[in-house]
Length: 171
Image (spheres, rainbow, N blue to C red):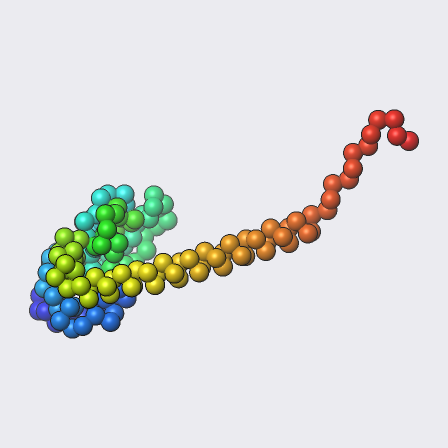
């Protein structure tokens, strides 16, 4: 695979946006090239993961996520599968199967860790990107918590008070 064909999909991955061209090229150079034929499993939900897969060409399908089988969902070229496994010990959150011949880049945790040891700016970039995501998730959770609290208040306000129970001997 020519390096241009490898670098181009990396440039569109949100985690890599903002990296210098030399950093992207080095990530591409270190990535393993993988091919999957139709029906082959790329990742399997719950299995230990030591890297992420970037779909370069071909179609894949997500057939299960977190134990739920809702029918296949397309995974298009440019998708990064198992992103967190590239940075930390993790298990795959989805089973992804090649729907046709799929060419991937496998970005291993070991290779990325080595690159971060050699390039502190790369490690800082990933740290900032992940921290930004965590802040967004925290904001979304606060919004959900607020909406749930508001629903609880509305429900409490609209629920009539129970009638006092009649006591024995009252007329």
